Image 1: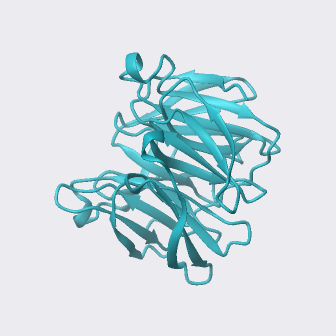
Image 2: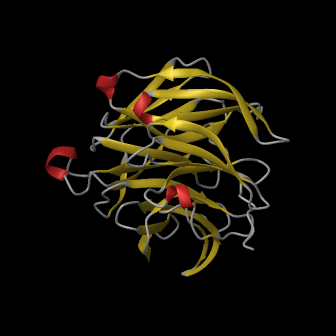
Image 3: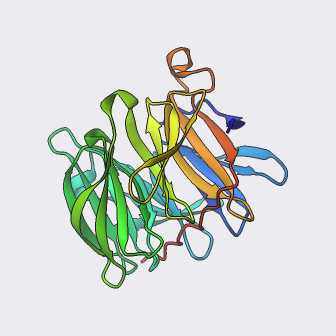
Length: 286
């Protein structure tokens, strides 16, 4: 139950841990400073591999490249330092950026944006042919997503609403419907942020300004809570050969005096609970 420190890059908004199954490495980003990192558990070597425009979220493509969702609505494919543009910008998102994304079993990507000065955030769906569809509007802070094991329901987090929602999800069309609350979290416990779903169908939700990671049953009951030496716990992913390693990102590296001495670090846990591989995106550059 004790989180193990992996790397402290003092991330301002450490986010988006992803296990790369081909490389057997963990990737993560610091959104606002435009940095990306990776860690090799076999050698325990970690490094910064990117510095540039902010990356609000990313997926792993079926060919192993990373699909980056960036500021101004830009979407780019990254492969060992080389960038290829999929979408140069979304005019409506020029003043903001993407925040947290999720690939579905078909290879589409559900991708949220932050609010602008005059409107709230959105949730888009990027189809494999490059078509972009607005699914939701009026979002406070678009955040973590995941599917139920039967692939019939999608979880979606709006941090500002202190809510994890659940939708009916249609894999054939990529549509979502019948929005209702899966879990409403108490305001005094911070904001629900990034999330993932384990092999038993339980939801793991990181809590920004709460300093903990929580496991909810499929019925929404709290099963476990793990405290971290950082107030801003931002996201979680399963990895490792058997998907029992958990990698957890934190933020606040620019305010360690208030957010904790290890704020902005990447941590590892192994509770013997198995996760499932994330889906690959299958978006092609034109």
